[in-house]
Length: 192
Image (cartoon, rainbow, N blue to C red; front, side):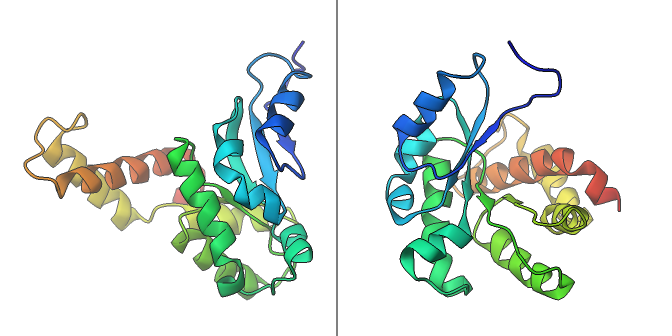
């Protein structure tokens, strides 16, 4: 039986689809599971994990991944793992994955890390400190310029794509839909 306010589970140390399904078997039906991938094995099995029901999202446990692999805490050293999670998420038709936390409380370090998060195609970031949430939401929110562009594209091509004229319109419309969805999700942060 579901508990009021219970929205889902973050499954730490997830390395296989079986971890997701075994956990789901112990939860109320249709409970979303966010799989926290924290090892080389988990990264290699990312698509299987993303495809397992009821995985709702992947998240990157960057600290434990670095411990497992010996990788440095530098964007290039973690790019492969982040990229795998992004591609696996997309292939499994999940939202972009959630990036690992920034441990320091220095706002400039968090801002730099968020640039990596966003440019890698990730759509969330774990927090180590509550005060990071507003900074993260603001950084990952579409800008007013992005939102205006998305509205224009959707108006021009039709929300259902009825007025698509060539192949280059398809990715434009997909991007516009993503921005529109993110604007709705991050609406409070967009207003800040």
